[in-house]
Length: 181
Image (cartoon, rainbow, N blue to C red; front, side):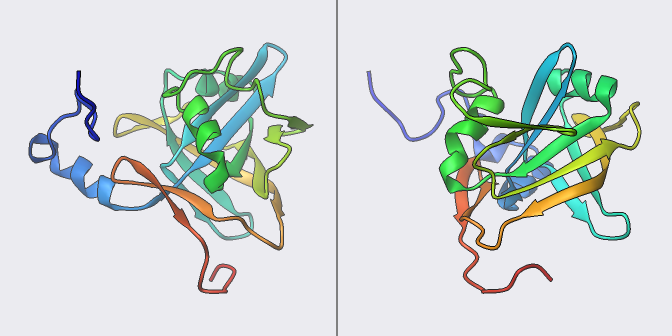
């Protein structure tokens, strides 16, 4: 048995669709989307996300239409979007369903309950919002989800942001010294 750095079942790069190869070269923010209702909690790691500033501001994401999150979100119409930092890689893997999660993905992390859903107690940056359209238009392999942001928490000192690029996690440490544009 030998150990290789690449996934043994991964499609070779030369055989991947050009759109997949293009997307893989773009750094994407790694966020955690969580929602809760009387039936339970659900969450999903989402890297296909964009925040549109305005009055009101919106977040747009692409999520799996078969996910537990989409099922709960369509019922409760409220969601929390948490920016994950470099130390949150394990949390991202649990909610991305690529790592074992004994007791479920919410186990092993302290959570704060908000009117929009559960927030990791250690979160530095998160937003709570309301689902704009519960029908969710098909977009690529997922569902387009638009959320009107109603509440935003931003701490003064951000951690090293977690991003996904080329199938791996990377970090953005914010060396520019600027907070947004």
